[in-house]
Figure 1 (tube, rainbow, N blue to C red):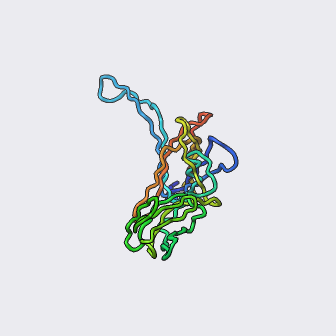
Figure 2 (cartoon, rainbow, N blue to C red):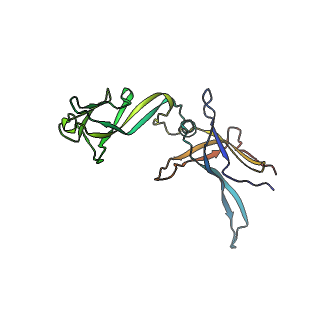
Figure 3 (cartoon, rainbow, N blue to C red):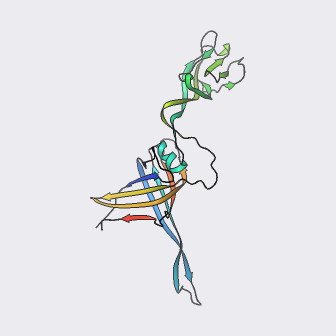
Length: 248
């Protein structure tokens, strides 16, 4: 008797473009997969209560996969249908610093050389937020030189312990996906391969043509982020939906 246990595995590979850098992407740390085959039914009734015939109408194949691993190449290939660039849009959150005791009252954050944008400042002891101004003249005010990443304060905040949050660029590692406003009808496609096994007996499903319909990245206090990607399958150019394979 063939059985299945666990979440199995699923891979997606982009098919609307080919070339270097396009390959299979596995949904890592998979939690669960659900694939539904659904048809509309058309009943034919006469004068009696129950139909005399039933025919299948339109069919639909939908799927959803929940997974924990964050992989930029999967997002770019399978969902957004774009080519990522090497690099990161990085965030430094609550970076500790101290305003100098004497002029100039300037703080240079750790990643100032690749500074991108300001996300605000707070006092380390009280958590009270600073207000960004053109020229700081009192306590709780600061300004930013966006060209250099330097933060400037007034003398009223000399020796103050602060927490700085900002964004910066990383150019040598990671994947950076630029999201653009594509024309309607632009639809990246991929082939999906699902596999699950128990005691050496495997079940495999290949769907030749799929398109992602929804990507959810939920976060929640005190637990892991489990992303969900929903997709639909359709017939490829040869009219084939895919293949279902079992041992028995």
